[in-house]
Every structure is written in C-alpha cells, then in structure tokens.
Image (cartoon, rainbow, N blue to C red; front, side):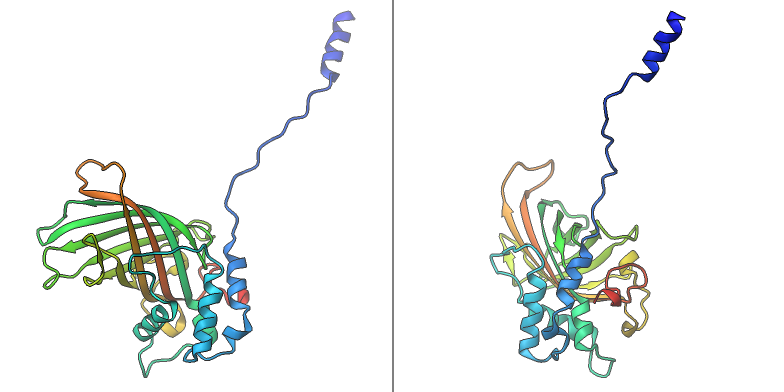
Length: 270
C-alpha cells in the first residue's frame, strides 16, 4: 500500500510549464508593399507620357524599398529605366498597357553582397565576375540573387554579357525565379568592371515569373529594364581570384505577370 501511494503521488506531482518553439518562416510581406504602391490615385489615374505621372511612380515605388546609393556613375533615373523597358516591350502598333498596368508591372530591386573576379571560361573572354547578393524589392520583401558577367577580350568586337537569377524568398510558389539576360555597356566601367547593364527577362523564368513566350498583353512574365552596379574592392581574395570585394546593385524596369501562378501582381491586390 505504501508503494502504491508513493507511485500515485509521483504520478500526480505537478510539472513545470514548458515552452515549445514554433515553426520559423518568413512572413509574406510583399502584399503590403504592393498595396502601398498601387493604391496611389495620382499614379493610377495619370497617363504614362505625363511627366507628373512618371514622378509619382518613381517616388511611390522607391519609398517602399531600402534607400541605397549606387556609384560611381549613379543609378539610372527611374523614368529612364521605365522608358527603356516600355520601348523594348511595347513597340508602336502592339497593344499598349494602360497607366494602371504600368504601375503593376513596375519592378525595383536593391541588393548588396560580394563579388569575385576570376579567370575566363572561354578563349574569347578576358575575365568573368561572380556575384552573390540579397536585398529587397517592391514585389518581394526578401530577394536572393546570383549573377555572372563575362567580359570579352575586345569590347569593340565582343559584347559584355551576363545572367542573373533572382529568387523571391518569401514567395508562395516554390521554384519562383526571375532570370535576367544582361548586356553591359563598355562606356561605363569602374576599375575595368562594367557598372551599367540593360536586361530582358529570360524564358527560363519560372513560378511567379513563368514565361510562355506568348503575347505580352496576356501578361506572361516578359520584362526589360536596367541594372546598375557599384563595386567596393577590398578584403581577402579567394583561390584563383584576381579581384573581389563588396557590391551594391539596383535593378529597375517592367515585368509582365498575369498573376495566375502566384499572388505577385494579382489584380485584387492593386
């Protein structure tokens, strides 16, 4: 009997409260950013060709992302980037987007990270640059990016080319990637490294930016714009590297998406 009572006491003895950890995940924060951009009446009601409309678009988009200065040549003015993208995507005679649609397609991404200059991959190249960066944008609160640039031996005969893969980390569709085909401008160099690029969205884009190469008026993931880079040389070099350091990047332009593959650019959030 004594042993039974002892066992009962042990069973009923109070236990200390414990705290269990919850699952860690990123919040889907881009919805609030999109709403802040697209609920601006001055933007949605003004014509794209109007200077005041361009100014409104620029200020509204930029106020929702972290401020970042890129040099030494500076950042391409937002209206200039949008105009380049507009002319690339919507030539005269094709269906033209309404002002509200241009706001919905506007893309601004700001990244910081590191770069490495290394040996070329092919005989017609002088060197290559590998970049790894992360940051934020007006379409996804957290962005992660990988970028490769290939510099020709002779810029008068070859073209500075590159590729960037942008991963929206808090996007609700697995495998969302925006691939950018880059073309560098040989007139904008810093210590021999290209600082200004134009880009078009590659058909390898997937998930939220799925590109089926169909009519752009359907909203099929096509896009274009500009990319500006600022290099900050310094720090220890990795094996076989000839240069390296920190990097800051600003990407601007237009990306068309129907919004059926994800909640990015869904009409109901605009």
